[in-house]
View 1 (tube, rainbow, N blue to C red):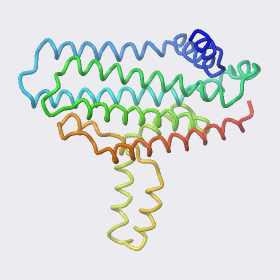
View 2 (cartoon, rainbow, N blue to C red):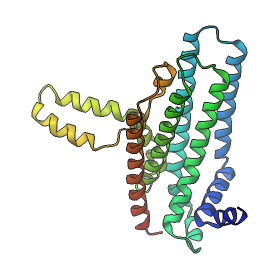
View 3 (cartoon, one colour):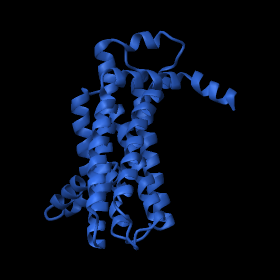
View 4 (cartoon, rainbow, N blue to C red):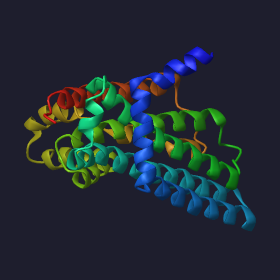
Length: 266
């Protein structure tokens, strides 16, 4: 066991993870996470003290708490992942790291795991605080909650991977805005395009539908209301399909980021 832990600690990607987290501590980025968590804790404890008198209020607060948890974690995932490489390029601090016996793929993996790990860990903590403050109603099941949580974590990992890939082309702030707009509004944008083509370009709609279906739609992974409203767990086939969908797009953006990073001159 000790040998396994030592091997993991000596892994080049683990070294990059530690450096990335230390950099966030130095720049006080982790304090932003701490402030979010403190505000969330104050809100949840206030709700707990006041008390919840009926199921409809509990359902509303559970939905609001889980949605807010996801939004805050998504902002952290996008901002951390989108800024890490552009700021390294600007400061020129990547060169000393690359001078060590470490491959670019290991650097990319370490930075992605560090950024995604912070966002995913924050999300789990936010969800835990929500469950402490808001009691579950009879229609809400642990199976549905587990499915929602896994799909949300997959979506956040997809968001981090996409942000890191695009940040190798665009500035960090621009990348953050682009990926957040895509993450929360991709389904709506795709439907608006389809609706605009439907009345006058029926012949083109079929082609547009095929083309748009090839683009990632992160809103497919958002099923908070299935748990909050007590509508029950997703079917096994649907859940597995959504999980595979998210994992496949993570693989696509990871391959793209690795391809791009391998060709950047430092």
